[in-house]
Length: 64
Image 1 (cartoon, rainbow, N blue to C red):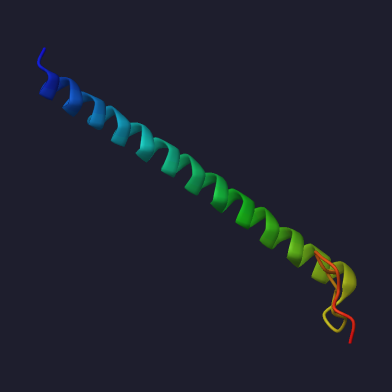
Image 2 (image 1 turned 60 degrees about the vertical axis):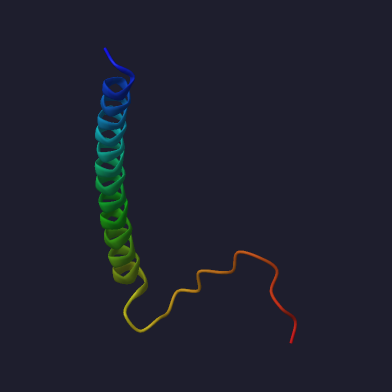
C-alpha cells in the first residue's frame, strides 16, 4: 500500500464516520424538539391559554 492510498482510505473513513455522527445528532435533535413541543402543549393545556407561564431566569436578574 502506498502512503497516498492510506491517506485516501483514512479520509474516506473519516468522512463516513462524520456523516454517521451528523445523522445521529440530527435524529436526536428532532426527537428532543418533538418531546419539547409536546411538553409545551401539555403545559398550555394544564395552565390554560389565557395565563402565561413565567419560565424564570437563568442568571442574576438586573435590579431596576
